[in-house]
Length: 178
Image (tube, rainbow, N blue to C red; front, side):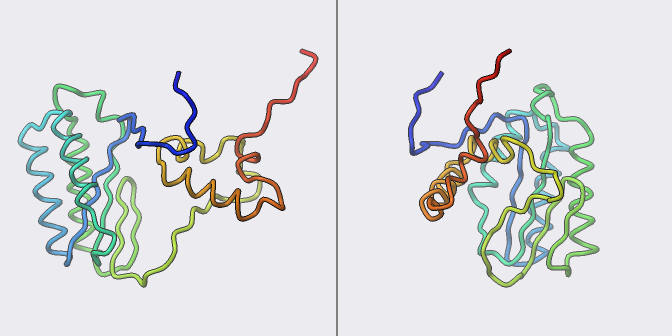
């Protein structure tokens, strides 16, 4: 149990998903960084060391670099004594993707998200329509990332005449006769 604080102090990353975030000044620079990661994995990198290396990659990531790639690794923490071979395969696919399709501005494949030299713009989170929404949608983002919670607070302040967005995401429980 933790006490509520309006300002979230830190990211609450649970480790079930690891994100390797790499950026560079050219596709070749980015490809080299991916190859370095793959080489470390193929060399028998343990999960703990992989998680630290992934964390370092996120720290070093720059959204201002013209070439950026994210590699999402799911459930690697289930293998503390060595990473499964599919993780090396994901990095091989990321390298191949970059080499064959690196001229495209945006590319998304399973576990690989690439962007390059796109015009600067604003960030938006898009959720599919036609009934796909559900209560608590986006809650994990708000609970993990302080920045997301801050944006929700700003939306609540800006649109308070229409009601709070947070009340739609986290509705109050309605008592029933059950």
